[in-house]
Image (cartoon, rainbow, N blue to C red; front, top):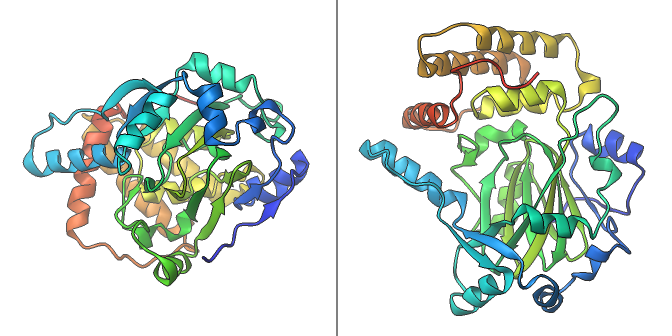
Length: 357
């Protein structure tokens, strides 16, 4: 398998921020929690003993919800329900997997009280802590999934940087830069193309076509995923991971909290991650977004259409170094417009004052 994500020992905070976070370069850190209690939860057997009774929420993947949304749009039936969820425990989920090895259900939420117990077993990395004057936006989640499961290619809507620490088991990861988004036929923050089902040379050819990154992340390793990166995970073992989300500057926070999701905005935001590199063109793009956001409209859907036009206009001159070919068929535009309207209404966007500065 083609692998091209660098592996390193824990660098200094300065080296990590300058060489990886600000350069938006993925990396695998091999010893982030070495010697800390969390590193002892390194196998399925240990997890059963130490975390077996941990309450978890077993849920279907976001893909299933997205499929229901599309069906609703096509049939004008907007009664589709949210992601299906059930309460269980770690051992309860593992027992379910034994009965149904092909399940697509995962454990994607853990009650805050249990997260606190897990967080007590490790020190939050210095890399995740804010600089002076920044907001501390650190959050964490636990993920448990069965061998053969996968997470479709998508990017996260909170626009935060991500560490994923593999407590036990292994996952294959594919990461793709926003500069390549048009190759992925994006719908909201989901991709209409994704590498599950591809094997061997076909898979590697896909990764190379999108100028992507690929690696297998193993027990005790921590993957750094820069904010806005498309990511795909394939569970090579039944395994658990700790996800740590952190650091948004004021520009990224405003765009995350107030503007609807779209790959044009994704590309714009990606250029704002490195606050030290913000120059005149960045400030011009940001001023245009703010002016469009502050323009009054009679209803949120009209404002959403205006914001979409603004995204695309800014993208055309601000993101010239990105892949510019449009591979999407015209009918996808209609689907994207409908998804945007549902997204705006569900998220109560463009109906009040800005949510973050």
